[in-house]
Length: 403
Ligand code: CS2
Ligand code: MG
Image (cartoon, rainbow, N blue to C red; front, side, top):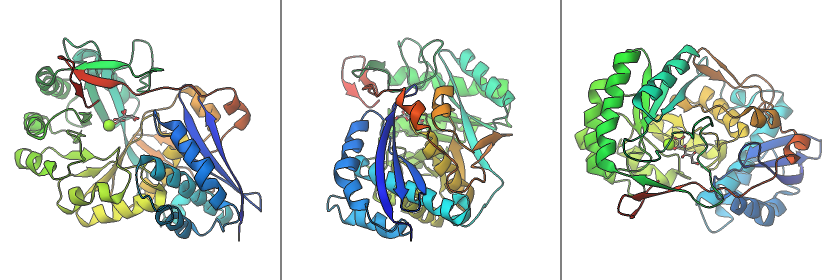
């Protein structure tokens, strides 16, 4: 059996912060797991180094389920983003190790390919509707079959999802949280107009998505969903905060626009009511924030019973290690829906060389044994950690609002 002899946390910031766990076995096999929790990175670093790594040394790396249970039930304090991200990193690294020892890509261990590739969606973000449509055209030219549309809200200085001029979109943008301003009435006017003009310009063969980023009340979400119905969006994401899962019943009464939720979820308990009552259509929980491949498979299996499909979060704060794991999961899971794709910077790609590829609107994890992703530790050292926060959001009268 491969015995774990070392586990190390590597912090690097090639454009943004990433936390990676590297596990080494006595036969020299290594495995990687992403442990990045945007804006709260060092909490996971401490959790891993102080509380998890000492428990790993000497364990059989093949006993993935047992290690998962040990770290979950054995902690006494269950769930939460920090705990579940730390468990996810260990779990992902162990799947990587198992694949390398078997000489197989991880998707083969998960049952093999259930499709030819994973449908992914690109991002089109613009200050104006015209800019957004222009970006969407470019994504379609690049081969994407699905595009998420976000545009600025007239009269507001900043909007979620819109990059600063000349820069890539990076949500964790300040040494202290930056503040943005929000107006629901203006937003509810601009989004249907964005979709109307996008359909006119782009036609009906491309899937169009939109992220509300938790900013509406349930009844406002119902209104937006019904206003967008004529334009047949693929999904409307995070329309309202989902701590109150029951709130989605009200939204469902008012719209047939498909709903996607769950990028901030960290366990099956966060989505149990949503799934069992068919209150959503896509579950966005990820390998990295929801307990690894092992736990995400459990969530997907529950969702499958109710014809809910996966649509995993994949913004740039999820490292190439998480992206690789998402693609192995996505290729093999029966109820795959779509995967978010926000390409990393060339600096990030150089630190994390990987086998996954994009082709004709689909992504494939590649056939290298394990996850098919590595970390160049020498290069990683050149990019030191810098504290970075996600922004906060206020209404025009100064009330703190969901970002
Ligand atoms: C998001 C992200 O990709 C998405 O759908 O909502 O941009 C999210 O804000 C960041 O990943 C937060 O870390
Ligand atoms: Mg989102």
